[in-house]
Image (cartoon, rainbow, N blue to C red; front, side, top):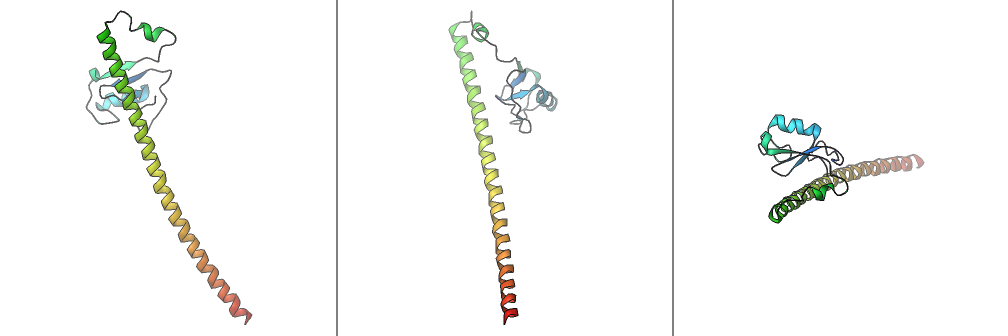
Length: 139
């Protein structure tokens, strides 16, 4: 998982991070800005301190599953449903960013191709002029 702030994108594995009620995750550095601005850096939703939850790194071994021990089935299912919804949202963000990157690269490629074609046309024109001059000098 990565920080959802567009300018950051830091990997969140192994460090504390925050999750907002709107389903976005931020590294500890970006969390400060998110809270200071009182809005989500990813979607712009207004946030209060109660709308942000600090999360610890993923526990190792059985610790993650032990955290659910003692809860009733409905609570565990509700937690699982929220986790799945969050994971789907993160996947959609990754897809959207990949799509934006792809479109940006396509635009850049198109501009470079146009510039290259223009340069080639100028070079062909200059070559034709030089060849005409050479012929004129040969005669």
